[in-house]
Picture 1 (cartoon, protein in one colour):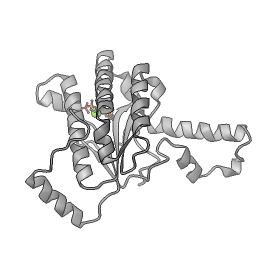
Picture 2: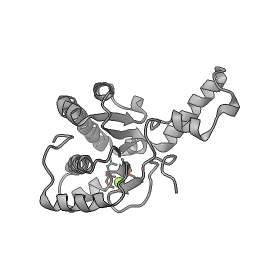
Picture 3: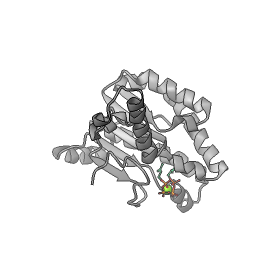
Length: 222
Ligand code: IPE
Ligand code: IPE
Ligand code: MG
């Protein structure tokens, strides 16, 4: 399934969209894509099928966001903690990522048409090298588009992101490029993977859970 669906909104979706647009609209929405395995169990399908359908729901969600003129979307697709799941499940999720990033590269015209810039946030060195390469190609191919931004958090945790930012600042001090007094909240924000994005003004977790599960701890206030 395509990342960017061309289909028009149906009449019910159009009605909902026009009602939503009356009020203030968020500029940046973050999603924790959760509940795939529970969904698979409920529908009595294979776990991998649940993950695959989770991606399809993401593509549908992106279509709504494009139609609502939401400029930026950040999705939590795979956490560093998720590597602790069974080898079979992790391999299945990596295969899904391989397929979806390959598909993304095939859809460059569509991304260009909508001006979608793709960023992938996380400790990418933990991923298989071929997936790192696909991600690098997708990010490079879309880096100049600036109508809307899709940030995919993959092999991500907020603790890792903050630790990397602190390390980067410490290196700056060690190399004499920064003074300890230069370190500040705003400098740390600029060292995060999310440095190019405004903080999200809406966070949605599918599945009904209310945990953050180590997602955007710095960026999501209160
Ligand atoms: C989210 O769904 C997808 C990933 C974390 C990769 P889950 O796999 O966590 O499904 P549940 O929450 O156990 O139902
Ligand atoms: C959070 O979901 C990570 C993603 C959705 C990618 P998890 O299902 O892994 O989180 P916990 O273990 O329930 O907190
Ligand atoms: Mg879960």
